Amino acid sequence: MTADAYAYCATLTRDQWAWEFLRRNPDYQRDYRAFIAIWRALEADYGAPPDRDFSKWKRDPRAYGPLPGEAEVATPKSELCTVDDERVLLECWMGAKWGFYKFPLDPACIAPAPDELSWRPPPQQEREIEAPYRLDVAFDLSLPLPPQLEAAKFRLVSRAADLRRQGYAAPKTVANQRAHWTTMLRLLDGAAAADADATGLLDEARTLAAGGYREIPRLTQDAHRPINDG
Image (cartoon, rainbow, N blue to C red; front, side, top):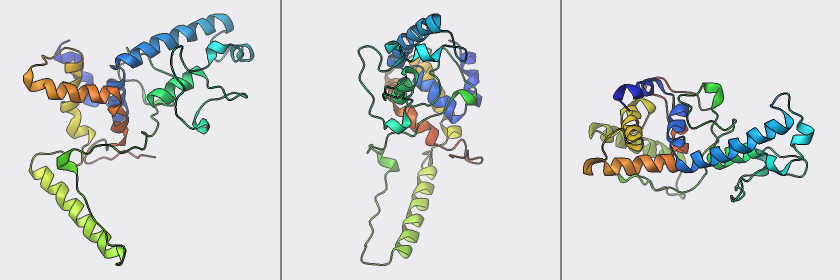
């Protein structure tokens, strides 16, 4: 692919960037192929939404997750599309596994429209923080908290300023990561040579495709025009 093939990256939103990495995940590609084959078979038998015969559709065991050979997802039932017997509809199982709410998208889809993407909050789990970005702050709970919180805030702001002076993106935003991520996509696609200097970047790209993409929607779009997280 030529550099022009990545020109669309200049206008991607944070949600679209997350999708760019997910759609390059080989496991997602495999799941989508299995999912869409089942979905089309169901449509052939019962019609396509919104005109399908859902009463028959929901009686077909193929309509429910997990995909053959896969396991249930560890997601609260309240966040899943279930029927009376609490089975999870296949499209919702896909979303729960891969972190989105909308209908599963074809990996061939580039820059989907905003109404086609809706990301679930990333799993709450401890993750390793890159050394330059880590700042440990201690509090003495035997003393009043307000002045300690103000002091901690000052340390955080000062540390972020120090990082920026050293050339780090602090905080990371879509705007200051755009060129970095575009290079990652080119490496994942084989459009850029993965030489010794790019090995670390390729590993980082694979980490984003494997699940790190879920953190991207948490970022601010750019330094001057934050996007509402609501």
